[in-house]
Amino acid sequence: MVKKTGQPGYLQIADDLREQIRGGALAPGDPLPSTARLAEQYVASLSVVKMAVGILRNEGLLIGQQGKGVFVREAGEGDPVPGGDVGEQLTEIRATLRDLSERLAQVEAELSKRRS
Image (tube, rainbow, N blue to C red; front, side):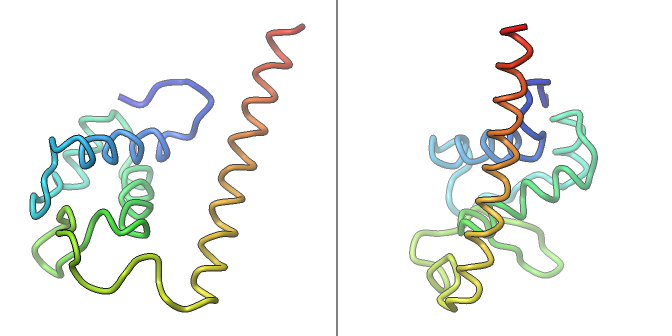
């Protein structure tokens, strides 16, 4: 379930799925539950779940197969991720920085509220 921690829901879901992958609960080759199922599980909207899955795909932890679903990526499968193109890497870095800036602003706002 997505909690009201100040961290965006899609990041909470991505973090949880990442932990499941790294912890072995979701093994290489395992299918990810459907977007609808994940939305129910995390009590979140479909768009929030899609954003979380997109993050993990960009990190190279998940891979989509047209018409079959999304799967935990096998080690050494496909091209190295993130993309080899410098422009793509720069775009990913900028998106990550934007996300981190938003998270930092939320933390600072929360700390400011607690001090008041």
